[in-house]
Image (cartoon, rainbow, N blue to C red; front, top):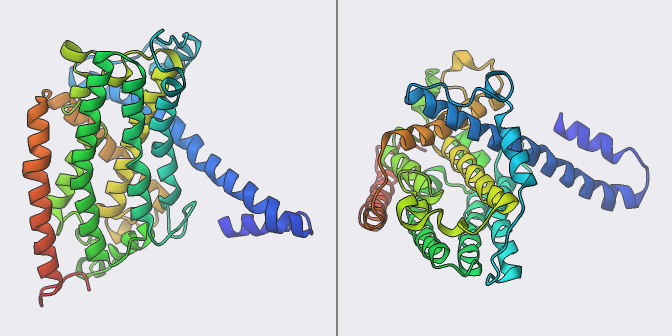
Length: 358
């Protein structure tokens, strides 16, 4: 269907300037809009779902005033932030102060370029998809550093130092998780990663959820999930925003849309980490059992991603905030050694007679 639309668009005007230059650019722009527009809606409603879910866990209704069942609450919050003045401190570095939020949200949106939503349904179905996503998301930390430094406030700068150290620490563990998945798949193409999970003894029996990577790579899956929570600075790893010590961390001096963009970046990163967890460990768009194969793949992908992102909120509601030294110890002394050991185990497993992947 997508190929048919592309071909139809190319045939609208029989001229070289249209088919070779104009239409490819328009097609890419349409693809970007088709990804970013639903993502922004998903980000907006994730804020509502988080507040509702936390409310239910704490035996209260959550937001229920704006619109039916509180469904217009994200719109009200967005409009409120839009109408607020973006106040810049007099001692702040003007250019960098505005660059910080843009640098924070840009990688969280740009990384979706390589995320597949079905077989061959990706904006850029590149062979090095995993590497591309890792490269793009590693830039996100610069937005945090720039925002903290440009604010010219000791609280913002301390929050930025904490955030950058935490993000860099857990990126290493997440990188090793990606590496293990690449080893068992034999490809860095995310579409291939999903398709490889639909093969094997259990998949032939119709129980494809037992063929997914979460089972043989369970420690790696857990490390990835927890590292994802830490990477996005979510509770219980949100010492960056430790209210009693350093207020709101690197975004303490931001108001209005500057603050809103940091907020959007955090939730867009949560969606990205969740969909990558689903693609690498939970079978992507594949149904859990063959009997449910009649349900479209994109629905399975959306449902699994929503479940993983709900786990982020569940973790927030359950655990108290870690001390900063505990967070760094977990990353450097526990997760990195665990992933390195599992890397060796999986390497030996691949070369043994009990290899289940080939």
